[in-house]
Image 1: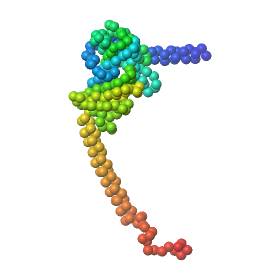
Image 2: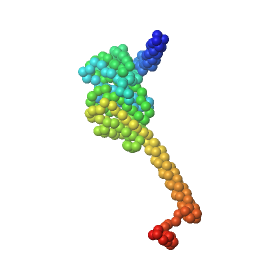
Image 3: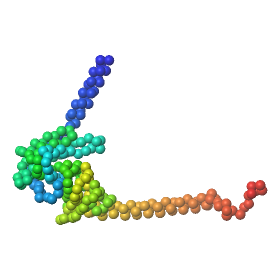
Image 4: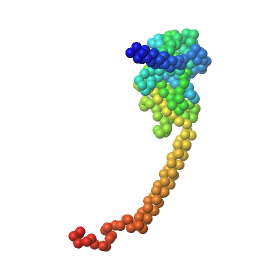
Length: 249
């Protein structure tokens, strides 16, 4: 019994240690102090500029001393997001870095203690290719700017959530705007213009293949029917002049 208890305690300890080892920090002092140039002059409460595999976010904060940055998982829990090049802009235009900003990471998020209750917070983070998603950390209007050449017009290749947005193209970049954000998550799937032609080409090739396959199946069925008729297997009773034996009528 003692051996079984000892084995059970050891197993629990190993699982616990494995869980602790699996928690890896997404932030680093070097990353937080990275240099970045942000566009502070925006009329949206949240402006997210997507470029390549990363994005720059600028949030207007009012009457709050901190903000928690996280991403929700399909299992219902939260994870911290990668945060780099953190900066804060005071209402008078003064911009400071991590020398005045305290950043603390936990298992469920990254908490940023703001140097003032009013101003703008900016940071850089990573995103997937052709797919951007983020929680909505502040209230008000939102604007997402896609990389050059990417579009959202084709409903098969693109998807924008939530609805109720407006979009326009400026200097080959699509700007998606919500005047009032009422959702907890923004998700944008976008595509390159050339992807439309590739997708159309695949449809044409698939259609030609379907036609060829259909013609082949039709010929095979016709050949099978001809062979059955030659073998006398397909006899239409209505066309047969022979009468049934007496008593079978």
